[in-house]
Amino acid sequence: MKHAVQCEGLKKIFKKKKEVRALDGVTFSIPTHEIFGIVGPNGSGKSTLVRILSTLLIPDYGYARVFGYDVVREYGKVRPLINRVSADAAFFKGISAWENLRYAARLYGMGSRDAKQRVLKILPKLGFSESRFYEPLEDLSRGMQQKVAIARAFFTSPMLLLLDEPTTGLDPRSKRDVQRFVRASVSDNGLTVVLTTHDMHEAQSLCDRVAIIMNGRFVAVGSPHELVRKYRESNLEDVFLKVSGHEWQEVEYEA
Image 1 (cartoon, rainbow, N blue to C red):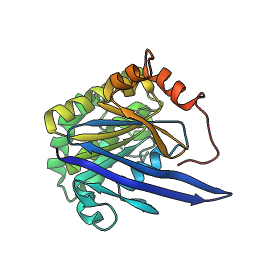
Image 2 (cartoon, rainbow, N blue to C red):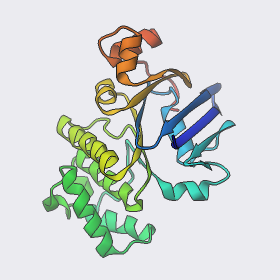
Image 3 (cartoon, one colour):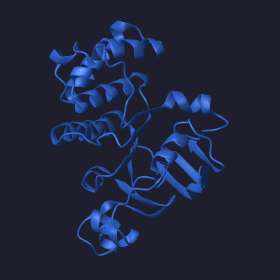
C-alpha cells in the first residue's frame, strides 16, 4: 500500500525555561486517501508534528517522508504536494475575501480568472455565499474566514492537506460545512488529510484512524471503532480519559 506519510522516531526538543520534549520518538504511517486524526491537549505535540510535515520545522531526530520525499532534505519536492490550514489563518482583514484570494493566487503563479473560477466552485460547497465574496474579511465571521482559508489551500491542488485545528471556535453549522467538504474532497479528489483537533466527536465521526498524543508520544492509534472496542468504552472521549488518566489540561508551552 502506498503511503502519503511515513515518520520514524521523530523527536523535537524546545529549550525555554526548561527543556520540553514536544515530540518524543513518534513513529507512524498514513496510507493515501485516509483522514488521519491526531487528538490531544494543548502542548501535547500536535502542532509541532504538523509543522514538521509542512517543512516549517526541522526535527532533532528521526525522519518524516511525504509521498516518499524527505521533508528536510527534499522540502522543495514536498511543498508542491501539500498545503496547510491552521486555526488562525493569516489574512489582510481590511480587504475582501476575493482580494485576499487573488493576492494568494498571484503568489502561487495563478491568473485571476482561473483563481476566481476555482474558488467559486469551492466556496459554495463550504456553505459560503457568493454575495459575501466581496466583503472585507473583518466583516465576516470566523467560520466564514476559515472557509476562505480552506479555499485558498486548494489553489495548489494539494495531495496532502494538513488541517491544524481548523474548526476550533467555529459555530456548529460552519463546523459541519467544513467536515462535509473534507469528506467530499477525500472521496472525489483522492486527497489525504491529517487533522489535529480537540473535538473528540469530530475525530470519531470524520477520521478513518485516530492517534491520541500525550507528552509528545502516541499512546493509542486505531480506527475510532477499534479504540472504543479495545478500551471497552462507549465513545472516543471516554477512551481518551482512560488512556491519559486525566481530563484535558492546559500546559505552559504550545507545541
